[in-house]
Image (cartoon, rainbow, N blue to C red; front, side):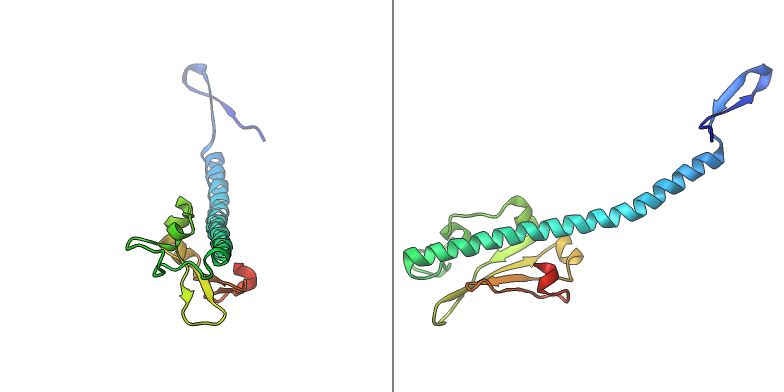
Length: 159
């Protein structure tokens, strides 16, 4: 199939161009490709954001374990080391990347009164991530490395 058609115009000149049918076929193909590619792209972005948050959660968990070795307790915003504006991130000398902070609220509450002491790192999706990733929802990991997901997809899919 030729891409361009040559037609006799007024005064014997030859005019070149695409027919309307050819143009409509190209527009239809682009539309089909976009309809398939966009949802896949959004799914990729959602999973990527989740993996970034999980990586940060594992880092917080690791830092909590190191803090336990040094202070004989897990880092807690209400601990004696904490100041009024303290947060877990400040106590553990770690801060989330802008991507994590934009898409998740990360907390690490200490399990009060538990023997042995314990903590849970929680990542709660927010904004567009909460809407797109409702199948996984809030992700958690505890001091024993037990992972969970609040959504209906389960740990094997979400972690």
